[in-house]
Image (cartoon, rainbow, N blue to C red; front, side, top):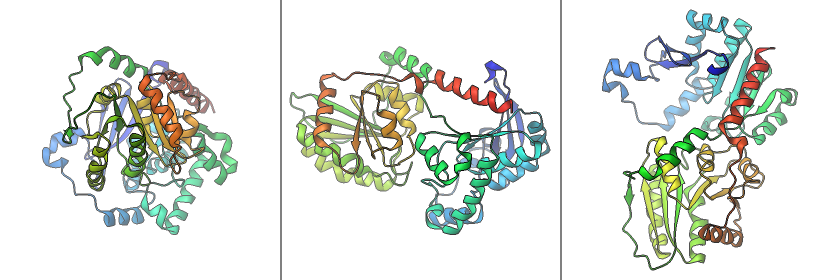
Length: 407
């Protein structure tokens, strides 16, 4: 954006209000009156104690959702709206861009847009009322009604609405047919620069993050299949379960009679860790071992991907495309996708030969067997689509900005 003449101002939440200049423009931090959200500068001033927080509590979280609509950040959003410096920034801006979650960012953008008559773009990285991630939206009709009114008003007010898949778009149009023309699909993507950097440094990677390896299995002289699942499972979306990953993989290994090293990379919930432990005897019975590696810096993830033979992706969601799909895609490695028929992931992989669709509700084990055999003999064609690359996405995003700015 800077290269084509835009100056970007980012509004952030922190323990104090201050402004700092960056290469792209400015970050303006507004104090969070509830003291929930902190920032690096505030933590440095207050010392290490400022990083301590209470443990997550289900009832407290549900109460917060009930009291603050659409979310806890709405109090900070109101403080931003009343801040004279924020209003001055908005008056001098060509457009306002809000990204969710949290949805209160859209509420703030709507307030500022209406006050300053500045057009705003509503960027929905996740669904709001469709496949909601907030428990109260799934459980309370009253809360859903309140947020439906908010979503409807903001969709009508926005100059453009960005969603990350065609399924999200279809779901919104089904509920709000009149705003269909302004809803645009703008997916996540993979950075070409990261791909080049990993390729250049792969041979120098020291592999320090060895993780906790279960007692090793003595492998006979058979091919070893290295399978990687990167990122969270259940905690990223509540409908995902570890068993949905492991059941078909176990059946596959039992059929193929090969050795497997199955790695789960990233943070897991305590109950998921317990489930993995319960799976150990079954995995050992098919001459396989389980490797657990805790969360590592995102910059290190590509090295684990490059050192794997097969990448696992599980997505019971109908509309979302997990961010890890794009982390996987740039590598050109085979991707085994457990998802639903005609889901956003299913549509995304249709033209990508190294990706294999497996119906999460009824896996076709014969087709899965053939795919993994192709992986083992390295006979798969590889295509890394340009339309998911940073250059194509940059061009389409700048075109949207230009169109909205000129309205």
